[in-house]
Image 1 (cartoon, rainbow, N blue to C red):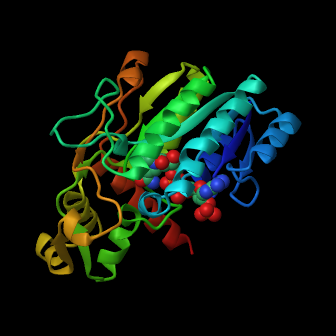
Image 2 (image 1 turned 90 degrees about the horizontal axis):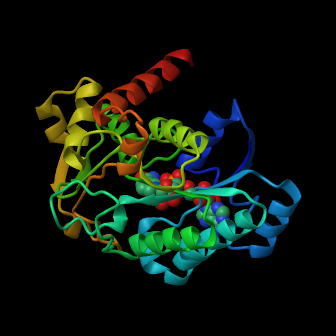
Length: 289
Ligand SMILES: NC(=O)c1ccc[n+]([C@@H]2O[C@H](COP(=O)([O-])OP(=O)(O)OC[C@H]3O[C@@H](n4cnc5c(N)ncnc54)[C@H](OP(=O)(O)O)[C@@H]3O)[C@@H](O)[C@H]2O)c1
């Protein structure tokens, strides 16, 4: 298949590009190559290249969505809608990533697509609005909600905490948020299966198990050879409210995927097993240098 990836330089986009390149013809479009808020550029690209699938990985991050609402709407809602319409106009399908932050996380439960989506911040609201816009614009849609993604490709908290701990760096860890965590390699492998199986709908793709930032930190410390007291000496626990970021985060948003269960997909491994593989792969790369 001919597959176009927008936002291709980001965490999910860069890993998708690597994984899909072996079997498919990939057009990896970084922000500078295609701005998804530029309707004319999108239409021209689609008419010229006629991809079979467009995978949208472009996004505005959580805190910026709170501080720049019109940019949030342009990138997380209007852009995806135009991509979905353009895909529809050439008979292509669209894959659009979304998030556990569509849920409010007020109940301590594992969320499925049957649960009401009621976001607590503007990022979650724009991601939900983006999902709806994509679904209305193109019946050939795969909405893939994911959560707390870690791996090579972005220096977010989950991806670098083990490196910081190993280096003896002190840091703050949010103590009152729980969610599913997702290794980007597992996410992109499952995304490939979803595209190839070709059943449209809303997926929730995450590793097994429920994580907190605190548990993730201690597990990362253990995997790099630190004892619990050694990790405790490096971390200061802080609540989401105390950290004073522009956007509050939902408190408890683990997810499971009804559609994957229906299709008979195997559950993705536990996040602790995935984290072990990620850290070991980084050690292997370091040994090769
Ligand atoms: N990472 C997570 O933990 C997580 C969790 C849940 C859901 N998701 C979802 O997964 C998807 C991918 O996220 P990610 O973590 O890979 O994001 P990311 O690493 O922040 O990458 C996003 C990419 O989008 C690009 N971009 C921003 N505005 C654009 C525009 N107008 N046109 C084209 N490209 C633009 C950015 O380029 P510049 O930097 O150059 O602007 C960046 O390369 C998103 O839909 C996100 O909501 C991610």
